[in-house]
Amino acid sequence: MRNVLTPVFSAGLFVLVSAGASRAQSPLPPDRSVWFQTHAIPSDPESPVVISTEIRLMAADRSGDEVVWSALWIAVTEYDQYGEVVDSWLEEFPTLQTADGFWHVSHADADTPIEAEFVDPPEMSGVAASDTPNADSLEYYIVGNGQVPSNDPYPLTSVLDYSFLKSNALEPGDEGEDEPVNTPATVDDAD
Image 1 (cartoon, rainbow, N blue to C red):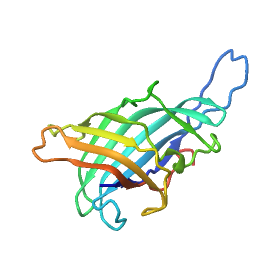
Image 2: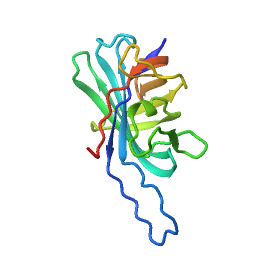
Image 3: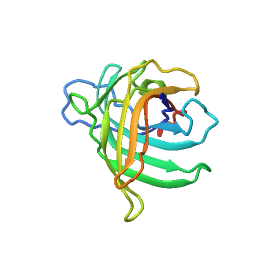
Image 4: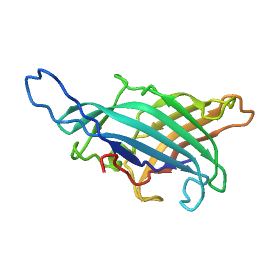
């Protein structure tokens, strides 16, 4: 089964001030969010979005056009067939399962990152708490598979492996292997 998620992101202004720096550093790009939208039928853009995942990123370091991103939080929202929110979950400071715990992205221009540069997220998994009191937590797993993004079937398509399972669920959660996901347009918080 192929799952398609669409990443979307927004960015916010982040200013780093370093006292006593001996050399000028390039400023870090603004914070941003990347979204991945899972559709009921992954290959059908007209089918409803059933899961929306937002990963909030903050630039931690920069070397030329490579930026090292830290995940501030991951938010997952589940929708019914009519687009109404069923539940939502949040985990702050999720662990990125990379050698150093960061998402390394090479940008064409690190001052203005674009959504297409965020379509292949590193492996991340964890347990997110529900926004609804006394509701089940959500075990999640997301990883990009390294495929080059395409414009089929969405304007910007990511190919991910993912799993979303409510902690006390008696039935399987939403999961997919090499599924196309919608990566919606990016919104920069600095705009």
